[in-house]
Image (tube, rainbow, N blue to C red; front, side, top):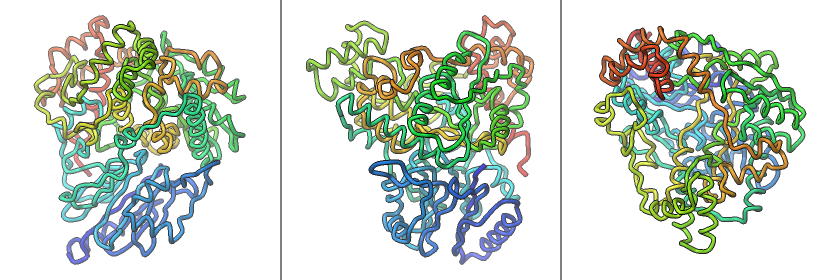
Length: 602
């Protein structure tokens, strides 16, 4: 598990110098940690570095370091596996205050730079793959990817306090997209932003803006756009594949993972690839038939495993301490199997099609017609696109055209309908939250984007999780090639009516990979899920859920309505309605809270 930990201090303050020395001594004695950067008032260390996978790129004149992995942008052909920054390239990164990294490179990285010799800044790459958090304690500014490291190396750290307003926002939003986390005084560095380390009064500088990229749209012919998309997918997938000697590929049987496999199969593989499929009882939980078709077409082995229905939810209480609660449902019954299969096949990476729904635009809506009308007005092509939007949104042509006109008045309101689907929450607790503090800054103002493209941007602003807080070091490294910066930028620039060509979700991606996918997958409109499995696990853990939640911290702090919760946990499945997912969500939050409130900070 690749991690980093750094800290800066004022060399003129004796107490800070003494604390910094103790920190450095402790880290140097810790197993596996290596120095990545040392300069007056700044130290950066890494754990789990591997040449060509996750490493350190020193910058000239001891002015900083880039951690992770860099690819150079290319004009044609795939990138090379190894990137060695020349002195000139390093100087350009410093002179442009990090902008050259965003413009000339991509990958997964955190850059710690001192461009002018004074002041330390942190840049998180636009994909946001590596987490990045900051906290200041008695004048020392800490930078880290894994909170447990801060707790281990700073034993005198004051007890971390829960930010209850952030918890209410997390319940309503299902994520925290702003700089604040769910712990007081602990902030996150947002992807694409150059952020001062230890200087809360200086605002971050946005070097990469999804909104700005989406506003600079392109409209190639559909055939040209499909070819561009296919090439970008293939290049990005093979760039990541070149880093590993063996890989697992989570092959769900859906369109996105099949596109990922199609991209890998488009060029000769240089490493063994093992496909892994999970299935569970229920109408939506078994996609083995589709996965077998995709694996057979690629000529690869497919391992089939059943999700463990005997999952004990008591185990989630042992979740690692993280700055924001971690939801376990997507990993449930699978993460231990991932670790086991990865170890058996000596595969250090798990490739997934994660992010494909957002990237390729899989939404049932009529927004593409509204987007076209906003840009081109009611010309002849609009009628055809309104027909496609009607097909996409499963409405009549009249409704599609009427909505296209009505949606021209779209203005994003982050508070409107907030938490509207929640059934167990006290509404007052949600209504009292200043929600703007917890959403991404690019979503807080008028973006000027039409409704469909705005929501496209919104879906792509939340990075996928990199660490597994339940399996920890045992989990293979998670790689989501579809969320690579060049591919995200291309899809942001393509209009929604082109991405949903033919009135189909992922329409352009389906066309781009039509020859690489089994026809049954390329044309399928259904999507697998875990609904039946999630309900089965819940029913088997009902007693634990009652004990954890009914007198839990969420109830005591007035966030959950105890009467509604009791009704939902009465044991009658019919009374649950749509609450099963919400209850699992609350269990994860409650387990996280108890790591900070019931367990003293070490």
